[in-house]
Structures are given as structure tokens and as C-alpha cells.
Length: 464
Ligand code: MN
Ligand code: MN
Image (tube, rainbow, N blue to C red; front, side):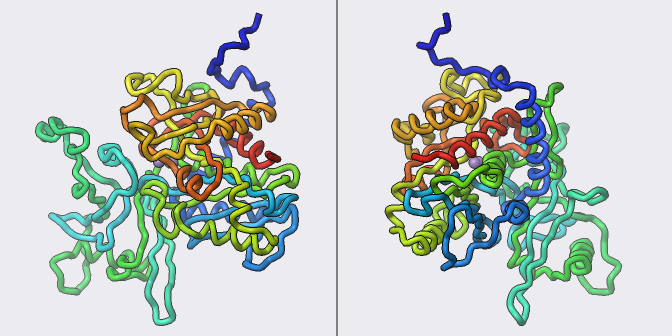
């Protein structure tokens, strides 16, 4: 007799037929292509805009009337994008919104980066987000971003992208040879690599120019950048350049059940949140929205982060266009804070709580609370909302589980959930379990990615 009294976390593989497994593997191919293309939030916004337009979404202009089924997007300073489908109820019954982020840990290039030292040219850097510094040395890095030139007419933006095309050079942060590392190896992992030693190697060839300078190698690099991009050293002052891992996303394992790649956190949630919206089969009852933001990895502050009023301003515009009070729309809304959680790692069982941590291949994970110590810094979703999502996922045969952030007092973390909940929106974390989170090469299970896609689609269609 089947035991219906116990709850068991099971692999999702037993609950998928052959056709579903094929669909899941196909879906991961599109995701891998997205990972390779969208390594910064700017790349991601550009790609998502193209994908949205191909699916019939248009840029929303303030004052435009809303009609059920209309599809729009709104871009925030090239670094965030909100996508939405107007529901049958317009704005009156609130929004079902999934909030994910597009930024990922990386190595940012400093404002005055370029210098020459002992026959080599290097870039000074400042790491972005929470990283284990040693993981970012001795791996190939690409350079991506923009240089904004100050011209007489205003601003000219130049895209920089070196390292991803076949034949491109890459960049690297060197590390000490083991033979001379006796002192370094005795340090803690926190101190083994110093942030100010994370300088990126960018050249070593002296310029043949007649210009008088002792920095002939630095001069060669500036001559190259001037030829390729029309920039001078002063233009670095208004640039956003980053080094990101230069390798492509690939299948992991004999059975290809995992994807390894850079920036799963949080493209593994933002991609399904967006594509589930693109692929909605019918006009939803409530307005469905994916809000994809920047700056989560450094606290969600700033004009492009989740704490920015950009989201509120757009929703206020939509409410005005639909004769609805903003506060009423907001209080009737529900948010899935779509962010990754840790997957149980058999190499590090000591930090996990086996019963409660998410496991790879058990589906998309609902995380009631995150935070540190006594749940500090968590919005802690209500039991009522957890039950509502259980009901929605179960009705739609979504493969899902619950997750938590390791053992109590082991560490901690947070997501954008509290910033949505603070706005008076019922919010719960919901995302894909990740192995090696924040490493240059993170790992996720394809099954969980596909479950997230199905989960977000079920959520967008949720009526009450
Ligand atoms: Mn994240
Ligand atoms: Mn993160």
C-alpha cells in the first residue's frame, strides 16, 4: 500500500516520459546559447529584447492604453528589463510577477586601469559580487562592456567584446607558481589571493612610436585600443568593462544531465522566467510579468537594482492607464523571487541539512526563507502563500521541491525577496538548485531548469 502519510523528496526523472525528457534536453540547448551570449546584464538585456520582439513584444510607452493579451517590455538603462503580458483583468486583480537578476559575480576593470610594470601591461580590477578569489586566477577571461565617450554632442557608447570569437585573444589573472608558494599556501583561502594582486595581464609588446615615454608597452595597448575603438586613456573614466570567464557552457556528465557554465546565478532563473512568459499559450487572467534586474549580487541598491523605483514607476503608469489604484494592484500581486539556491553537494555534506536542502534533479525549489543566524535578512513567506504555490504547482504537474540554505548558523544569504515583500507583495523564493554557486563554472541540472520553466508558466496562469 502506498504511504501517503510521509513526504519524500524524489528524483524528477521517474515522473517524466520520453517526450518530456526530449523537450527538457532541447530546452537546455537554447539556454546554453543564451549563457554564451549573455555574460553581463547589458548583454542579457539586449538578447532578451531581441527574443521578446521576435515573440511580438513591443516597447511600452507611458500613457498607452492596455488591452488583454498586449505584450510589452520596458528597459531600464540598458541593464534591466521588465516584460509583461496584460491579463484579462488588466491591473485590477494584481500581477503575477517573477523577479530574477541578470548580473553575476565577475572581475570589473577599475576606473584608471592600465599600467606597465616590469615589461608587462596590466589592468587594475575590482571584483564584483561574492567570490572565492582563488577561483578567478589562471582561467581564460573575456573582456566585455562599454566605453562611453564624452563628445561635444553628448555621449557616444562603444561596445567592447574581446575573447569570445574564434581566434580572439583572452586575458588572465596569473597566480604564484607552487615552487615559490610556501608562504601563500600557509595562508587562509580568504587571504591567499589579495584583491590588489588580481591584475589582468593584457600585453608585453613595446610600441615603435616616436612618442617619448618610459611606458612603451602601455603605449602599444593604448594605440591598439585607439585603432580598434577610437578611445584614449581618459575614456576609461566613463566605462563599464568587466572580465568574465571565456569558456562556453557545456553538458556535464556521461548522461549530459547537467549544464556547466558561467553565471547560472541567476540566468538559470531569468531565462525560464522570460521564456515561460514568451510561450504563454493563452491570455492569463492576471497580468503576468517578469522583472529582470541588475545589482542583486551587491545588495540590489542603485537605479538598476530591485530597490530602484523603476519597477514602481512602471506599475504606476500601467495602473493609471487601466484606471486602477497602484496600492490596490500591488497588494493583490504575488511574486516569485526567482533566484538560485544551493544544491546538496556530496563533497560537502557537513554544511548541508540533508532533509531540507534542495537536491539536483528534484525540481524547482520553493524556499520559504533565506537569511542568516535566526533568519535575519529574510522576508519569510507566509504558510498561506507556500500552500497556494503548492496547489498551483501540483495542479500543473510541475516537478518541485523545497530548499533551504544549509545548516543553521553555517553562513547565509539573501535574494530580492525582501525588497518585493517590503512593497506589500506576497513573495516567496523559487529557483533552481546550483552546485559551486558563484564559481566561474557553476553546475545545474537540466531537469531543474525545465521544471523552473514549467513552474513559472503555471504561476503566470494562476488565477487566485
Ligand atoms: Mn542570485
Ligand atoms: Mn548570487
